[in-house]
Length: 515
Image 1 (tube, rainbow, N blue to C red):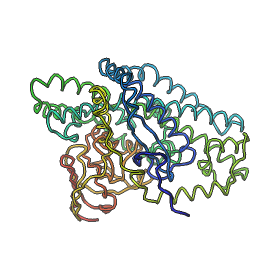
Image 2: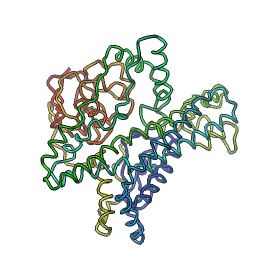
Image 3: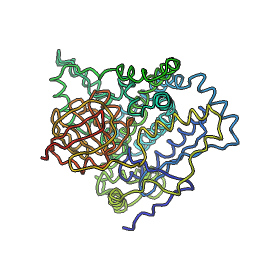
């Protein structure tokens, strides 16, 4: 197989997004995600008066994005919208609309499509069903990115301004938000054990809402909750022996420490921006589950049902090959218009995707551009951009000069406070959950929503990737588990079974003894 030509898809600087889809994307998903994500982002940017534009593209199966400045010729209209967004606190209106209208619309649509059994539909009805789920995914993905600013700007604004007022870094400011994102800690709840009927009803309600959501990643090749029965059973068993574990402290201590560093004259403003950040903090994970992961899981279910049918007819050698087809090709395979791909071609694509996933993708494509020219824009626009980019930087910091790692000491980003000592378990994904025991230190490349199931059982978490606002960091704080992220090499540096000390306050992991 020829090496991938890693070339920018268009002029400008393109950055690799490997926090969501680590390897090469399935062709079906690669056609769906970039279009609706970019449309949603740019719709939100225009509404808010953010002088930026977003683009997404797939190169070598990997997702890349570009953030570029808007047309300076539109500065007057953009400034008007930016001023209005800040004055009216547009993030509040976006959240209110999500809670009172859009979340319920999307939930009803998910449930309606979920009640249909794709395996019982004829080919024509299955084509219509897949088309309906695709449309729902596109609608939900657009919604998620359209209101992305509502969940990111207030948080980034607080971090940026708190850092300016106190000199504190993001890792010192973020703990003040602890306890404000219950959706991030949405693990399996305690089940009512007072009677078998109540237990069954509680479990059924949970599975109806969460069972078909993709949890091991963000692509159609990832699995849903119902496809992880062993993990689900282990979680239920563990939860039956637990009393209700409260979330971590609400951040009051961290807030007081940070607030003491603010001048008395600035404290009212500090309190105000912190209040807004706490209101916005949990929206990102709330809408992600309903708007993105749920319809994605329903689409996976429908495609695999089609794949099983086609494999039984001999049109596919393996049912999973259906994920290597594009939306148009899936329609053709189910009797729609156009030439269908051959089974051999789809099998070859799967092998190519596996090889592509092993390639080292460049972190950046295209020449390095000058920093965004914020001096060209009015102050309200600059504040919006600063808050937004601060949030992005805290999700996944760019490459910097990491401290030298030694055989017994790794440095990363302090993500959730506390110290913990225990056995390290290095896992490659949810398929390894069966090896976890209560009190283990989970060592992973990065965590996805799948890890919410097991995080309450863990003693600490260490990851290669991520910043103080990545999924791992947010969820660890909500559960009160020490965490160090962004070590770069934890999964290759720490041996499985080693005895480690995790210091979530300083960002240091010490290997006390090898396995």
